[in-house]
Image (tube, rainbow, N blue to C red; front, side, top):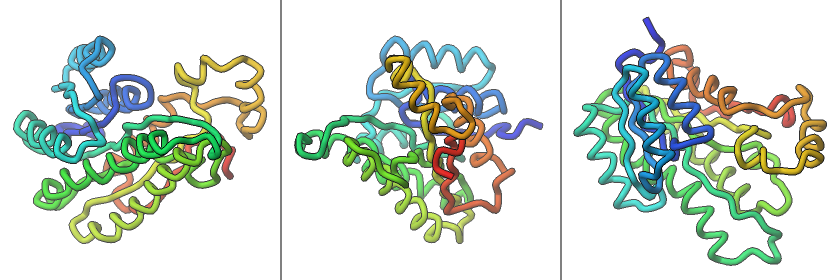
Length: 248
């Protein structure tokens, strides 16, 4: 029996990167996948095909995670298509890094809305479904900078710290219905964005990590699999660091 056999996961921002890695890992364990991205671009549709080729039900949806009304509409559509939602992964996120003295209101609002408000939007939309089912797992993507902060990322750090507070509060509210809420705090993860950094910058980061390497999206996906499955049935309200020890 696969760990997520016949379950349905909704993953936001899963067209590529960490979100895509989570979708693929879940699909390997028999999970049907509904995922969202801001638009049905070529790489999103390619991810959809890749997931469908794994023999599970998979469908991509265009949705602005920062928009409350759009979120409710897409969740309603997903329930019509899939019947239920067992796992929610709030992964959608952006960065607009700059020093606080240069940060504009638009840069602040955009990051808070996409990273933090989206967590409220999707959790709010999915909560009644999981409440009726008397169970579910919500996984929120935070960051080590939400715990320790980082220069030139006041907006991003604030959004990721907010996710941690939201996760712990929601866990206390919804545990009575066996709805678990946990957060993952990735560290320096090797993605297309970090690969674009100069070698000396990347090596400098890696030298600060006890395991002496950057993480992979698959490393994060394995933690998400644990939190989505019954292996973590008595785990809620927690923040799991996936950072190679950089925040230990």
